[in-house]
Length: 392
Ligand SMILES: Nc1nc2c(ncn2[C@@H]2O[C@H](COP(=O)(O)OP(=O)(O)OP(=O)(O)O)[C@@H](O)[C@H]2O)c(=O)[nH]1
Image (cartoon, rainbow, N blue to C red; front, side, top):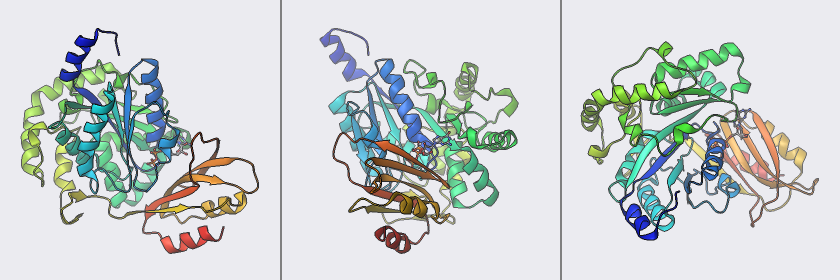
């Protein structure tokens, strides 16, 4: 980041602790959009950034559009909060040792329970000096509102993600009328009264909360025991909010760490545990075995109901037929993305689908990329969808 003589740099590298920021939020909420803003932000500040991207599917489409200068670890075909959680520590360690970044950004899958990832990052701290700083949860405003009316497991997961945040971004404000926007903020505030909250369109916001010279261990310092009155908070998250955190957390951090160690079902490195706002209560619930299942040997899995279909398209397809297929996707498919080549145009397209809205972006890949479509949802028929895709 700053110029120094080589021997000083060696000492610094040996001793320094690498800040890690976790980007959480439900499928399609805008995590990659935020990640891209952050990469640009750090680039402008001359901060060397490394990225860990996690996808449930077999391909990392979002990663293909990240500057090739950015060191990146891709963790595919599973979720770092459960099935491939054990790999996160090693991936992080290798990434840091190989590239010596100033900061690491982890984008989790939208189905991930951030508390489990926090534990995994904490385990990494046993291997290498990392410090979880910001847990930014991107909230899909319209989707949260919809899910809050229905309840269910997906809503519970969204609640977990909001509760654990040190910073909240209520995104897709362009799709909410003023009344609904207030309702969404109320839901979020009831779940997490602590974290600074910013309302955004395409995650465009001031990013100083991610500055590296801010207080270390911020995520750890957030108090969980007391709720502040929502009206005391600036909805746009200014520095006063952050000061409030540090002051409050000081009094209660110990209590929380103690409670947590007792409540947690797994035997992780609790001395190092890092938690965000309100995690204390939620941990008890999150580990409630009546609600959730454990896989053999794997830690708690909060999203077994989430399923993916990855289909490589063998040839170019008709754009109208494809768009029609996307538009009639069952509501159980809430996220789809991929790269397609159309017979009726000369270009390739990245497509993004989230909750009924589809977007096509013309692309010119620099490297060889396959035509592929990934679908994520709950209990949809993979066979039916596959059949439709093959008929294109
Ligand atoms: N209308 C609208 N669309 C948005 C906004 N932010 C992001 N999107 C779109 O929503 C889709 C998903 O955005 P991503 O940033 O890829 O979301 P994500 O959370 O990384 O998605 P996953 O990796 O699948 O979990 C894309 O088509 C974005 O262009 C917003 O504020 N408003």
